[in-house]
Amino acid sequence: MLDDLVASVLTRGDLAHLALFLWAVTATLIGLVLVRELSLSNRRFSDFVSEVARLNRYLAELSSL
Image (tube, rainbow, N blue to C red):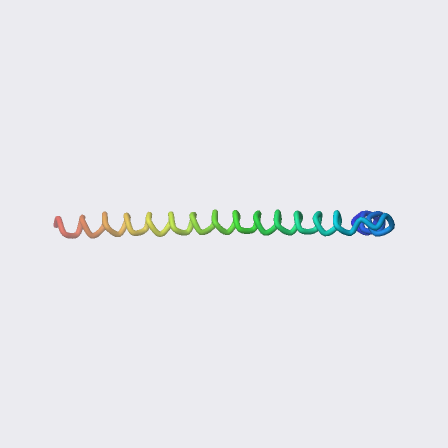
């Protein structure tokens, strides 16, 4: 399918549109990867904050004894 698209563009000599399409696809994929990584990073940070809160509760219970 992609070979047909590239062949069609090359036969018409429209390399600028092919370059623009490839740039757009690449930029979109990079954006999706970055959003996924940001989501995972936020989840890890949330887990870290939850663990710190749990540790604070545990230490507060120990100090009240």
